Length: 175
Image (cartoon, rainbow, N blue to C red; front, side):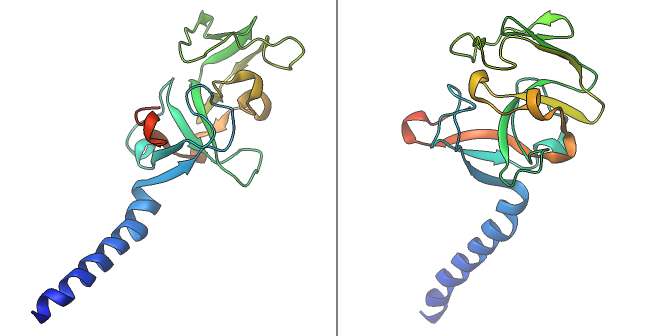
């Protein structure tokens, strides 16, 4: 009987230590989306699980949604989509994205991103992405502080990849 009384608290303590002492700092962590920069893919109030090991095992790919430390020294991490990789040339013409001179089909955008009078939404670049960096942009181009403004992001700033949206329940799934 006494063994059974101690077993549950020990299991709970070990579980707590594993989750908060290893899983959260090293493997995965929740992230709250606090801006409109990734609408319609991610909305304000969405919560996503970040895979913190993703880029320890492989390189970022175009299309990945990544969490990273802001290169301009901002205190909060940012979440954006990778649109170009090291060595790529990236530019906008009439709001359409071109990487290495080829137009990129962006089915995740819900409207044309070119907004007259809004800087860097209709035309931008070309910019060559240096080695060890990625170029990121928000899906809501007219409302996103991204690489068009602060430049390519050092890969060392990457925290992880958005793996799964777990809140709100009606929007469960891949981002």
